[in-house]
Length: 160
Image (cartoon, rainbow, N blue to C red; front, side, top):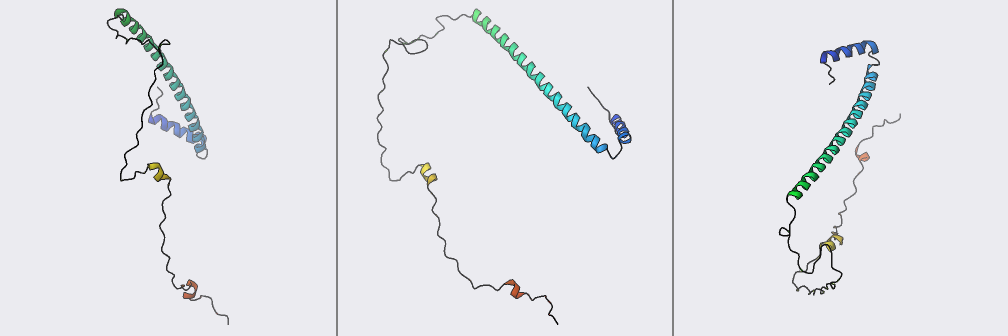
């Protein structure tokens, strides 16, 4: 595609140094780098858009081929009564029959749990209960310490 050899790049750098000058060269390089980044972003966006269009076209083509193959298989092997499972009596295709009476279900009997010696506490109760605080022993009081100013001699000179 676009190829710049190292010698060509060195020649471009030398010409830029002479034409632009060493003072303005960093500013010019930032400007060029900014626009190269913009161009790469536009190219990346174009490429990703093009790739998504190709991918969608391929998916549509695959769906058409799948539908055609499915039709061919169904023509070659039509469904027959012997291949289909028999349906139980009284049931219809999709839902309940309007003629049939509603089915009632008895309420289940719930027996109390047997008593055990160990009391089980649900995890939610444990998480919600505040943790007990340990009591601290009273701190021992020590004799007041002498200040550090009293220990160090003063460096101030006496007045004559």
